[in-house]
Image (tube, rainbow, N blue to C red; front, side):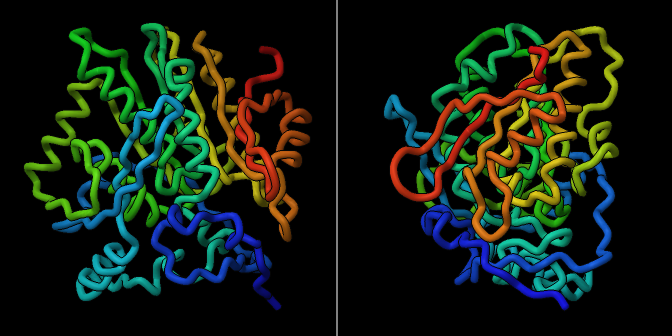
Length: 350
């Protein structure tokens, strides 16, 4: 018989950062015996945009870098997602009860992996990238791929994208190509949260307050054209971590040009059952990038331990080293409480 158990997430999440979950219980529903995993699937950005409602409601999260500069991140409200689903219910038969993650549960293994929330370590990684972006996102003239595994609300990716746009807008030269891949277990998270957040973050200049954004075909067309002007392409991938996911994220390149790859992940190593699969995808992506002659590295943000579950950064590092990777701690919290860490990961041969 399946039982729910506590993850102690309530103490790990800043209420000001929680993504729209009303009175969450902090529970994780135990995996049901025999429940299948989701086969990975690839989506074009244009197809994701076609699911947008006529208006997006957002709140704005502001993060401050060490130099005092702030970046503002508009994030779609969960009640706005519920309103969209209720409006579409008559036409599609899909309502909020049929979409995993719109209940009080934080995690339902193999059903919903927490993507509608902005988790604490995602904020850590976004802020770290605000300060360290030149080291990780300047490609030296090469094309670049940024992959966020377990993207959810995609805060770390959006941190880099905003800084690239600001740099591109102030330069007369054409930026090298950037391909952004946003991967999450749930297609519904990608459609209802990840891609809307990407659109809002790019399109609103800049939002410093909560508000609404009207969606028209002209607005979406201008968004796609603006991405093209800045030499940015975007795709999305849903499904379980595994060998079939890697070709969707990083297909064999027909070009002989070297491509730099940066893989981002936050709060993805909480479950010992999935750490090996996650690590294999991570290392395969790095290996693919290295095969082009490009630079390849990853940043993984996580808690040192997830009480009640058994995963954490220490468990991940053990698996990583066993599978041929190497990790170095580049940032960590100080003081009492559950430690939070950002680890830079490369292939062990580097």
